[in-house]
Length: 311
Image (cartoon, rainbow, N blue to C red; front, side):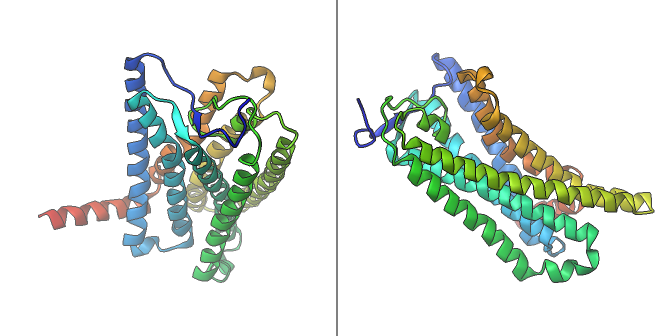
């Protein structure tokens, strides 16, 4: 039987057997990918160019856009290439790289969302201390901690996963290399080590979730105590986009990883993977810019400058 030393490539899940459907999937993925590139790219262009957006909230939003771009760029380009060239293969090194970068971007993003919850908590519940608690140095350190924790976690998971012997072939039942699907290829007792690492990561994620919930309980209590309706609306307008992004991120990830095995199926697993790996990076820019007048004004300024230089 094949083991890890003899596997040189993995076979990813094919979306369709007919050429027409493969090209349709390619076009659909291309549209989603371009939308994610455009949305996140606009945020990456607007925040540095407008001095009014040089605040902790937009600094963290810029980091979130970078993570979203990295996340969706880890999965969709390979899926599009496979659909376009009618192949399922991904090299062993490419599979390991996908696992490494996916865990890195997902863990770093959730850590960053936790930091953003702290930012909103301080801004609304302790506004007089906002400048001292969230100075430029503190923001850089928190962002670096989010990126660094994601990278260390990704290295740990990738090393554990790809040190396992594979006894069930090399066909991965997913359109990208996913840890849970690779673990299914191993029947060795060594996989319990990676399961233990996953449980540890889940416990850390649950701690972040508890902190986010606690922060928003305090935030909503503070907002509801604001006497003016205009003040309440302004406070809510800065919090609701972040809360919507957190809800989207958690709901798709929880359903993908914690759903009962009795309802699990290859088609449902595929839909789950699309929801948590593709939908959030594409929708996050839209969620943040929908009711954010400052960001809209910055984007108008960027487009205005581009038109000026063209003339």
